[in-house]
Length: 339
Image (cartoon, rainbow, N blue to C red; front, side, top):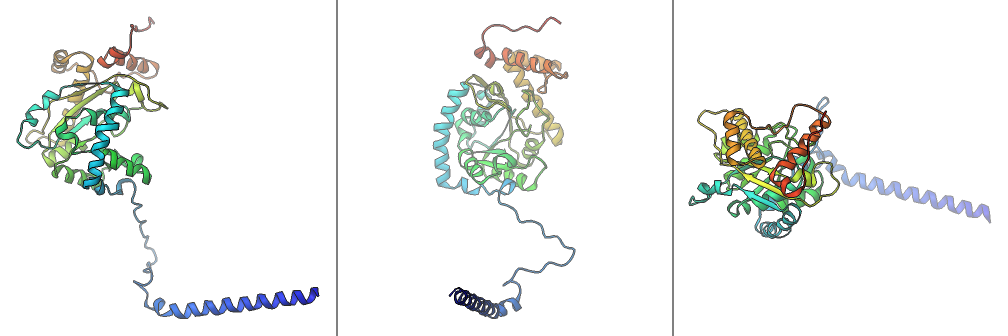
């Protein structure tokens, strides 16, 4: 009985193999006309020695954010901005907003022009704080330049950034023509822009080297640049902190700037940087003292003191304490050690 069962199993296996072979031959005959026709019914052939570039993933700098500016996402974003974002900024950062009167000349125009806001960058809270602080004339037609490699590296993160912040991807590793063309088109369409010239959050509480994107866009579009200094967010949720802690901040708006006749992008970018540094001095002292320091060339550098190590950390802590945001947050005094 065992040998008969084994023989039956062998015959069944042979029949299955013949059936599979017949099916394969049938499929081969049916697809033969298509295979003979080639492209476009089949993928095109690639000549030897030619490397085919990879298709864009649709993420990073290639993520398309146009859908976020359609009517329905725009309405949803307005609700998010006036609700959760403003509430979170108020609860976590308790901002004092200074200098919006310096934008009055633009606000009085019959049609409020788009502008480019250029704040320093110490925290992920900065964008929400900017949206909370920017006057209403610009707040609801505002795009935020966000790092493509951080905010647009995953589909869910890209969708959330585009919907809640109207963020557009910026390639900070190189000057991408796609990013520059997109932001330029948006400004031409009447959108204002928040762009961080430092390119990323400060790693140690001091400023980093500035890039010239804002100066370039202003020169190409005619949009004024509004320098902004944000004080206090680094102590609340700076780079490397695992969770935010409540504190107080100050947002100082400066006088709008436009490039002078024949002024290069590099020179205009330096002027924007110096204006933000003066606003930082204003946050540390007062308006008149900051302008006196600027006239004398004594404005404290955004990059902080030249020395390194613990003295640099001590200096940033002392700077935070002496600023208005720090004075409202920290009680008592702190002195340099007697070395």
